Amino acid sequence: MKRREIVKVLGLGVAAAGLAACTEEKKAEVVDCKPTAAPAAPVAEKPDVIEWKMVTTWPKNFPGLGTGANYLAELIGQMSGGRIHVKVYGASELVGALEIFDAVSRGTAEMGHGASYYWKGKSRAAQFFAAVPFGLTAQEMNSWLYHGGGMELWEEVYAEFGLIPGAAGNTGVQMGGWFNREINSVEDLKGLKMRIPGLGGEVLKRAGGTPVLLPGGEIFPSLQSGAIDATEWVGPYNDLAFGLHKAAKYYYYPGWHEPGTTLECFMNKEAFEKLPEDLQIIVRNALRVANQDMLADFTAKNNRALEQLVNEHGVELRPFPDDVLKQIKALSDEVVSEEAAKDPMSQKVFESFVKFREQAIKWHAVSEQAYLNARTL
Ligand code: CA
Image 1 (cartoon, rainbow, N blue to C red):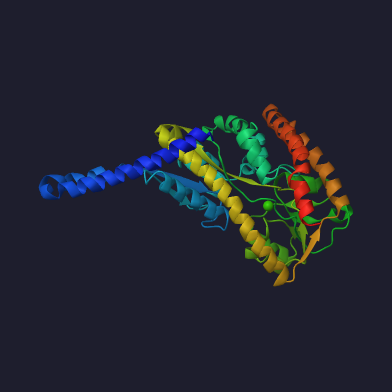
Image 2 (spheres, protein in one colour):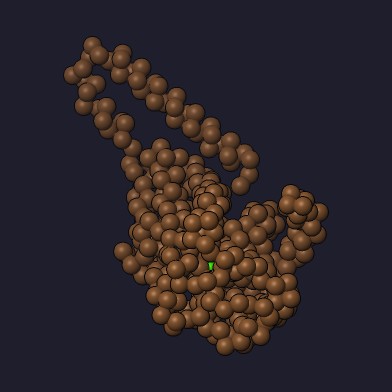
């Protein structure tokens, strides 16, 4: 968001602090006239609170994602000085996980916290704002959204549903997944039954594998019983919590299918537009803070969890061979461009996305990538 809007928010904080001090002074001054001052005071100190509901696709307090939604709600409360109270509902508490889009669209709740690839059935273009195989990293996603035209396109896609979208977190690069067989060539993916959702699943299918859709809670038992051969989930922090290392031998990297998954918080447009301008600015900036904070949280916790997985649980870390990645990338490019060609809006978003990725590849070859390589020489 614009610098002047952030300044406005900060200015508001200062103004609020000044108001509090002034109230304290007044209290001190009216000690001698208690009878008239006392009844009025509680009314003046308690402005009307705007009550909002946030429905989420995550189980309540789910590490990283659910806790990220909680943090955003807290931030909105704190930054607004208590003028907005957001109550967070876990999946199925108010509506089912995959019903949140419709619930916020019709105004049953004011906010929804999820990931835009879940809404592919509403608008195919939505999936480009969450994760694309061999797509953008977290840093690149934020750059495309905030300063590369991505957010305007996202707003255009959600407008017909009466929703305003916003980025509200990022997992960073995910892991390739848990396997019980070695992946030495693309041939090894043939016949592989793997839990891998979205466009990544389509790519696996094209490589001869069978993508399976399973909610989080069913992953571990399915992998342990052999109902699936492999699974991806998120990264060390979430994977360790699920105990996936107890059901598979090899932990492959990198997560080519989800290189920087953006989580979202969308709002009911009518509810948002009813807010006074200063609260609109506060909500938008709270989203920005939550977006950055989730990535920092994931990075710090993944660092620690990876050490634990390798040092305490003896997990065998394996890179996908370069040749496998190269072939999967070629298949991904096919799958993603075919998907984009299915409707004009998807094509429009895809073209903006691809153009940004081309620039980012060139710039990061001489910056992030060059530096990360140099650091480990
Ligand atoms: Ca994943």
